[in-house]
Length: 468
Ligand code: HEC
Ligand code: HEC
Ligand code: HEC
Ligand code: HEC
Ligand code: HEC
Ligand code: HEC
Ligand code: HEC
Ligand code: HEC
Image (cartoon, rainbow, N blue to C red; front, side, top):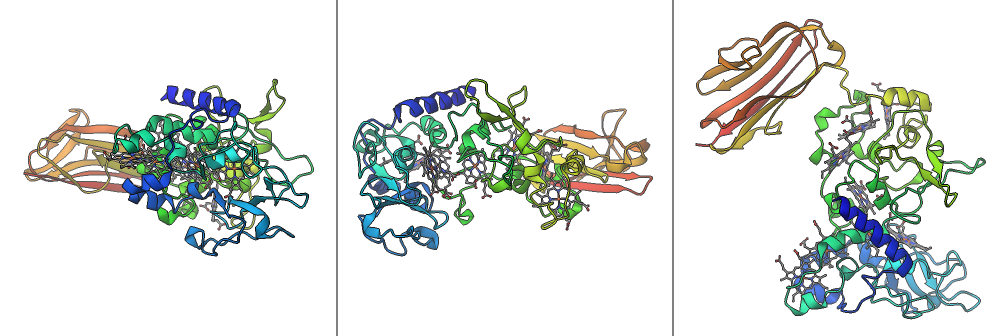
């Protein structure tokens, strides 16, 4: 996987210099052809942003219902009329897109909302961009299709299509392709971050679409974008189901409880905060020191630019002003200082009350297993405020042939309905294995209960049915 990332960065660098070596070749056939055999994928992809990134107008006002999801056409800048406009872009998610066309001085290929040429932008907003072709409508280079079409990620599909689905485009390369466009600044090795000017409001900026460089510095660096995203479905419009894996599909929600007053806050709202006007930041890890975003930077000697701090292991962390203070500002929730946030953030997921957790094959709920299937039972205990308080521990299994209790001295199961430990101080237990074997057919349930002498208690049970 490391090598994948290496290739990402190499490709990114290559593209920055050459303008897209992989895409500059021939053999493109266009997504209308892909559609013939991949209709379902095509339909969902047309509801997502990529193909809509650059839409030609033919210098006429497009139909009002051009965009999916009821998104309206953009409003034209003051004094601009549709007969000056060649393209709309960036409109898909917001209806606030920009337009490219001929300005008042008669120069074509200008972003009319801003007045600068579109040249630099076009490579990431098209398919099969070739900087040596063109110019096209006043824009440097030529391209095969407007927007990011099937072959914008999969590469030319001619061979594949003409061999009736043989020679499929290389998906490994397709993954690497995300990083070609979804990075900010100069490369994916460093995270660009510009602190605010001394007289400016706000937190500072990661720049545009820095997802790849952030992911590379996150605990998910060994994964790739399609761990969590289906690139053929929209993420901006959640009902399209573009996010295919949520935090709690891979991380146990029960092991990450929050103070009860904040139980309604979703993992993403803290760990991928949009704080400070950013999009969802893909760093995932949160620091617990009182360091402001503007101070979490270093200046690179070689280019004198500011970059986000990275620790000795290559990991970058979200600062607490981006996370807690965006809600704890006296409006959405009571105001906090950075120091207060740091004190509260430390150990925020450590339960304050005694909690027990028993898992069978990693599951919390009722489980059906085959007779020859391994059954693994693990116990966890988080003491909360009851650390070392004497307690009665019950570790039990009910079976078709009676009750069993787990005996700590025997380190195994004995018949009978007895407590496992009496007047024994509560201590932290993490995934202690209690059983790992097959079971005869029948109905079972595994119990873990701790009753502390200070009144704190918790019970957990997992029923298991072993098929005959
Ligand atoms: C003539 C029909 C046809 C056309 C046209 C076609 N494909 Fe395919 N494609 C197939 C078939 C058949 C498969 C194999 C499906 C399977 O085994 O699940 C396939 C598989 C794929 C795969 C998956 C390969 C893998 O390793 O799983 C990708 C990616 C793909 N096509 C992309 C495209 C793209 C991009 C286009 C347009 C440039 C396109 N296809 C056009 C028929 C076609
Ligand atoms: C390195 C590739 C790259 C370049 C160069 C690039 N963009 Fe983008 N652009 C992207 C990506 C990736 C996204 C979508 C990701 C996101 O919105 O987080 C995007 C999205 C946009 C959006 C839509 C934002 C929205 O709110 O929906 C606009 C507008 C835009 N770009 C304008 C430009 C302009 C203008 C330029 C040239 C000055 C430019 N881009 C250059 C990659 C690029
Ligand atoms: C934004 C980049 C991107 C675009 C645009 C895109 N794909 Fe894909 N596609 C991928 C990636 C990445 C995978 C591998 C996903 C995975 O590993 O789970 C993939 C997988 C596939 C597969 C095989 C697995 C599956 O989901 O069935 C097919 C077939 C395919 N794409 C066809 C297409 C077609 C046809 C289009 C245009 C309608 C298209 N793709 C547009 C990136 C893209
Ligand atoms: C561990 C899961 C995960 C991984 C890996 C991941 N993302 Fe995301 N991404 C998300 C989630 C969750 C959202 C926010 C969805 C929401 O709630 O709107 C998101 C949002 C986005 C958005 C929409 C803009 C925004 O910020 O809301 C873009 C673009 C994006 N991701 C691109 C990428 C790219 C490119 C990669 C690979 C470099 C990647 N993501 C890797 C989970 C992930
Ligand atoms: C050629 C450049 C390019 C490539 C390659 C590319 N993207 Fe994008 N991506 C964009 C642009 C530009 C947008 C903005 C679309 C918009 O705002 O309408 C975007 C938007 C997105 C979005 C939000 C779209 C939505 O409808 O929710 C996600 C998620 C995303 N990209 C993920 C990926 C992933 C994953 C890959 C790799 C498989 C990838 N992108 C490859 C340029 C690219
Ligand atoms: C596809 C599975 C997957 C998804 C989805 C996923 N993660 Fe992870 N996550 C992992 C893996 C694997 C690790 C690395 C575990 C390790 O290093 O031991 C990890 C590590 C982490 C870490 C660092 C762990 C630590 O102990 O410090 C954090 C924090 C984290 N993820 C948060 C999240 C959040 C928040 C989300 C949702 C936005 C999420 N993850 C989505 C698989 C996933
Ligand atoms: C999405 C918004 C949001 C974010 C982000 C957020 N909080 Fe909260 N938090 C709340 C709300 C709402 C309450 C309820 C208190 C109120 O109504 O003012 C709350 C309450 C709390 C409480 C009081 C708990 C109690 O039992 O009374 C603490 C402590 C707290 N937050 C700490 C944090 C810390 C530390 C962070 C950052 C790691 C954080 N919060 C991030 C919205 C948020
Ligand atoms: C109110 C903000 C907030 C919310 C919501 C939140 N977290 Fe956290 N999370 C934190 C903070 C702060 C830390 C760092 C705590 C520390 O280092 O002591 C953290 C640490 C983590 C870690 C790494 C350390 C560990 O305990 O393993 C993981 C994994 C994690 N959170 C997962 C999740 C998941 C999954 C969710 C949703 C079920 C979630 N978090 C919801 C603030 C939050």
